[in-house]
Amino acid sequence: MGSTAVRLVCSALLVATLAAGVAPVGTAATPPAITLSVDGTPVDDGDATLVESDPTVDVGVDADRSIRVVSVRVDGTTVRRATPNATTFDESFDLDVASGEHTVTVVVKTDRVTTHEVTVTKDAERPYVRYTAPFETDAYAPPPESASVNRSRIVLSGNFTDVTGVAHLRIVRRTEFSVGSNTQTDREIYTAAELNGSFSQPLFLGVGRNNVTAWYYDELGHVRKHQFRIVVEDTAPPTLSGLSAIRTSPSTLRLRGRATDNGQIQSVTVRPENGESTTYLVEPGLGRPDRTRGRVSFETNRTLYPGATAVVVEATDTAGNAVERTVTVRRTVAPDLRLDPTGTQYVNESTVVVRGRATDGEIASASVESVADDEVVDIATVHDGGVVTDLSVERRLDAPEGRNVTVRLRVIDSAGTEHVVSLDRRLTADTPAATATATPEPTAAATPTPTAGPTATPATPTPARTPAPESDGLTIPLIGVTIPVPSILGASVSLPVPVVGPFDVPVVPVVGIVVLGLGAVARAR
Image (cartoon, rainbow, N blue to C red; front, side, top):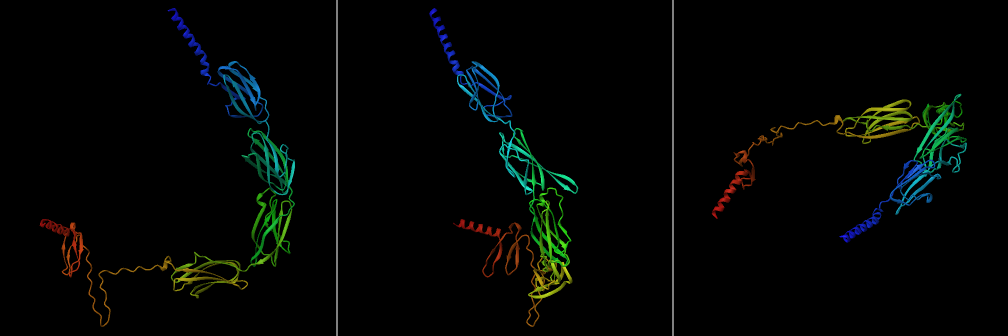
C-alpha cells in the first residue's frame, strides 16, 4: 500500500506541474487593454482628435500577465519608455508637438506585442490669407493699408493656410457719401462658408474710399482679422448706346437708350441742340453705392422742342465724368395698324363688326370696308379731320350674301401715304343669327296630295302601320289573317314559300313539328 500511495502522489504532482506550465500558454490570446486619453478625453484606436495647444497625454495598460515594456512614440520617435514588470500601468505626461497633424502610438509588450495608434492635430495658429485680387500678398503677409481700383464691381479673393482649414468668413464694407451738407455711411455685409481652401467674394464699392474689415474663422474658432481700404478712382466717362429720338406726333418725341459706367451713373439729361433747356431722363442719384446704377436704360416720351431737328443726350457718373451725344430727330408718320382677330366677326348673317387700332405715326384719315370677291360691299369713314397718333376703330358693316368676307382698315398718314391691313372672316354655326330653324317631322298618317294635271291619278291612302302586339302569331300571306300565338312561343323565323312568298312562322311550333317528324322516322326504321 505504501508503494501505491507514493505512485498516486507522484502522478498528482506531475499533473499539477503540467497544468501550471500550460495555463499561461492557454490565456496568452487575450491582449492587454490600452487606454489613451488626450487632455482628459479617451481616444479609441484609429481615431483622431484636435487640440489648440500642447496636450496632456495619459496612457493606461491593464493585462492579465506581466507587462514588460510600454513605449510611447510621436511620428515614429519614442518620447516615453517604461518597464513596469506588473499587470497594470498608468502614466501622464505633457506632449510637446508643433502645429499640424501627428501620429501617437503606444506599444505594449507582454508575451506578445500590442499597439494603440491615434492622430492628434494641433491647431494653435490663426488662419493665414494670401490675397490674389484685387491686390496680391505673400502667404503670411498682411494686406496693404490701401489699394486703388477703377471700378465699383470687384472680386476680393485669396487662398488660406491653416491646419484645420477655414470654415467661414465675414466681410463688412463701409462707404461714406454726402447728402447735401451731411455725410452718411452705407454698410454692406458679405458672408460665405464651405470655402475649401480659398475664397472669391464679389463686392460692390462706392466711388471714393471704402473701408473693408474681414474675419476668417478656422474649424477650431481661431480668427484672423484684416482691415484695409479700397479706393475707387473712376476717371473714365460713361458710355451711351442704343440712342434714338423719334417724333411720334407733331408735338411728341420718343427718346430711348442706355447709359453704362464702371462706377455709377449719376444722371442722364436731354436738351435741344441749340438751346439750354434741360430735361432729366434719369433722375440724379444720392451717391449711395447702388449696383443698379452701373447700367441704366431709359425710354420716355417728351414734348418736342419747337423747330428742333436734333437733341443732345448727356450722361454723368458719380465721379463727375460726363459724356454727351447728339441725336438727329427722326420723323415717323407711318402708323402701326392692327385688326382684332377676336373682336372682328359676324354678328348675324348680313352684318360684320370691325374692331382694330392704329397707333404711332401721324394719322390723317381712316376708313373700314367689307369686301367679297374683290367687290366692296360696304365702306365707312372712321376718321377725317386733323392728324392724330392713336385711333381706335369699332364699326358695323354690311356683309356679303355668302359666308365669307374680307375686312380692311385703310389709313392715310400725314404725308399722303395709304396703309392697309386686312382680315378674312367666315360665318360659322356659332354666330347666333345663323342658327338653322328646326323643321317639324311630317305626320306618319298624312295623305300625300296628287299632282295636278289631266293625267293625274288619285293617290291611294297608305294605312298607318299598326304597332306590333306583345306576342307574335302565324301570319298567312294574301289572306291577311294572323293566328295568335302565346308570348312564350312568340319567337318566329321567316320561311320562303313558292308562289305564296315568305311568311313568318313561330319558332316553337316549328321545333315541335321537327321533333315529331324525327320520332316518326325513327319508329319506321
